[in-house]
Image (tube, rainbow, N blue to C red; front, top):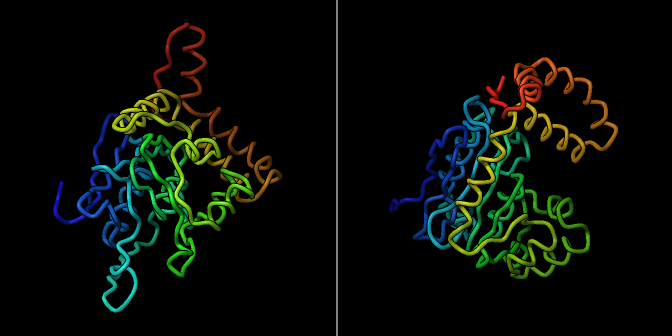
Length: 259
């Protein structure tokens, strides 16, 4: 742990573990931490040796949100947004690799938007979620306004976005914002376990699945159907496709190389 907030990374075989490390301030984000998170996600996106990402946090809380004075007002710090980097909220450029997020304790505002920019969420049973921007005179700007809709449906989305209320991990699981709830302290291990299971599959097959699903979410069914021929060519011409068929014939587990 450090006195200044930072984003750390650890390589675990084909998994890149991305760690929010500012527990003294409930893992609130500074502009520098946002830039570091973008760098980490870009490394996950570009590095062929990483097939899955896990985002987690040190301490009792996932994040209390932004360190507001560092983003707004006369003492606001400037962000160093790099051209071509992955957007931490997946609004301009989204990471093509699957991302599992492990959340615990306080999960406020941008914390929810970060986890919804990923793919799968494991929450500790002590997690407390709140999208409270409207209580501060602003509004969600990191994707909550549409990702709540896609995950939870209109009524559930508007219920929590309008009330700005705090809700439990079980409630988040019921409405689809969270996929698993585990005892507090087990969320990171479970997220890593899920990531390891994903990493046993062919990475190209997983990536094009995410690409096609994103195409549907962004452009609708016709666009998702139209991209199938290109996806088919990419996967069927891959070495991993040949390995998958050969392993089936030989009745053994496949050993994929990501190419």
